[in-house]
Length: 168
Image (cartoon, rainbow, N blue to C red; front, top):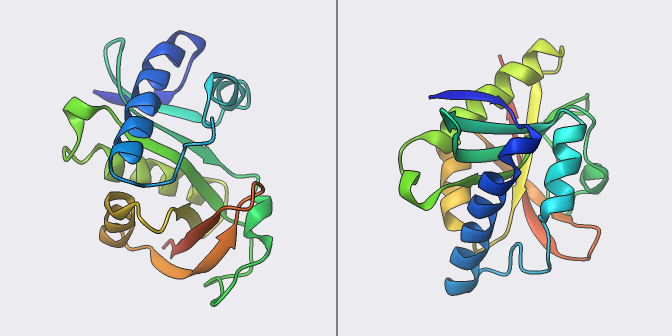
């Protein structure tokens, strides 16, 4: 098992995981990823930008995420709280694990990779956001040392819970 940058050949596996997550959200009344994205075009763009990561066992994709060092425009304004830091930061988005690999530590494994990438770029902060009702993601962020900082509004107007972790 390894974590590596996503490649074009991984798109079907990544999309299968994302579509399973969309179904899970829908079945559990979580209005996240229900407006079409993430979609194949977004995943291909993440790959093109070198920001797609997968945990793979050979050619089988077990988990996926997007790690960026370019900031996040929707993080420019935070409501009912404040960020822990003001400097440059890494971002982790689109964290999803294949149904057969859930509760195996793969999401935390990807968080650790995002921390390494962020630190190697000279940044000391990692941010993430999730839907209010996405309790598994909220618990995973809490477990990995993220602090709830307040709310943000996505470009489509959807509210999200914003988190940050200061890296040492």
